Amino acid sequence: MPKIVLDVKEPKEKCEDENCPFHGSLRCRGRTFIGTIISTKMHKTAVAESVRKHYIKKYERYEKRRTKIKAHNPLCINAKEGDIVRMMECRPLSKTKNFVIIEKMGKEKGFKERIEALEAAKFKETKKELEKEEGEEQDAAGES
Ligand SMILES: [Zn+2]
Figure 1 (cartoon, rainbow, N blue to C red):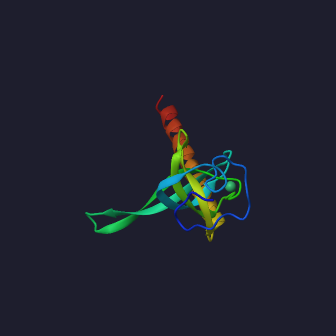
Figure 2 (spheres, helix red, strand yellow):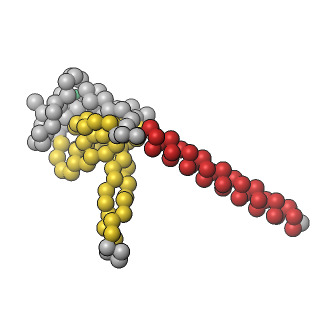
């Protein structure tokens, strides 16, 4: 039986994971977060990004703040990149991991497009920086 107090749907599949909140002995308590999975490269660990609103008093407006959270990804949930998940706090499972995914809530619309746009922007940035560096080198050469 799940040791979670929230009314989350139990995953259809079963797993043997000791650190699964449904089939193992992991207890969840504390805070919950909803975020989008941005990486599942690590073993049984997913990195989720959560957007929260941060109020700025001076301008009386909100700005978007992003938080990256590492969360345990049990095999029975097996969240993939682009999935929107609910995470809950648990005991520290590793140095930087003290959340566990407890529910898959759906897929983020346009996740692929967003990541592609981000990659393209990063590429542009590095290209710009490289060009700048090259320019500086040429300036230095011209002086001598
Ligand atoms: Zn499980």
